[in-house]
Length: 178
Ligand SMILES: Cc1cc2nc3c(=O)[nH]c(=O)nc-3n(C[C@H](O)[C@H](O)[C@H](O)COP(=O)(O)O)c2cc1C
Image 1 (tube, rainbow, N blue to C red):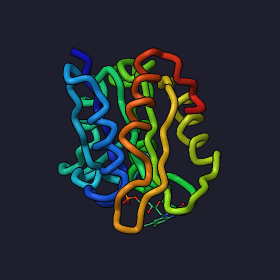
Image 2: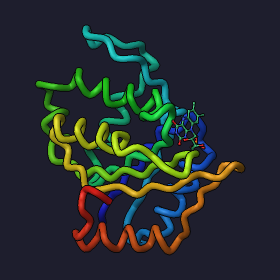
Image 3: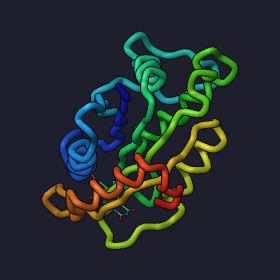
């Protein structure tokens, strides 16, 4: 059975990004096991060069889930033209893994990006920040899906659009441009 891990980097566990995640999960085949980790529920210390973190820090637990999964969906809103701080910290912390056994197990992992935004438009540099980072780390960026959020914390896209996105993802015809 294929295992999909969703890492939701929104700073609220219930909002537009989680709604988009729900639509994505609905679109998946029943045989796929999909686990969602909301970064807001995990203690994630800021990166430091020494690689020394508090006892409560859960970064390695998250990474072990990533390693166990066939595909990782990074879900996040746009906060000030860029990724939310928790998602940025998640990427920063991967730096400490370089030259460790865990890092070798991360290489080539399939990554999909789902994101939400308040404005009708978004800047391509948002996607590029994920894609370039994944490329550098050695993760395989598969593509993205985006939707404008609504004022009440929902999303404007439809279930059908997510179904089509997942279909493209499964058939491998999704380009990294979404
Ligand atoms: C701190 C903050 C910064 C934001 N910056 C942007 C932005 O630069 N561009 C944009 O389109 N929307 C921006 N928004 C709106 C969010 O991207 C949008 O409401 C999103 O759907 C929220 O997702 P969430 O409910 O999962 O947090 C911002 C929202 C917050 C709270």
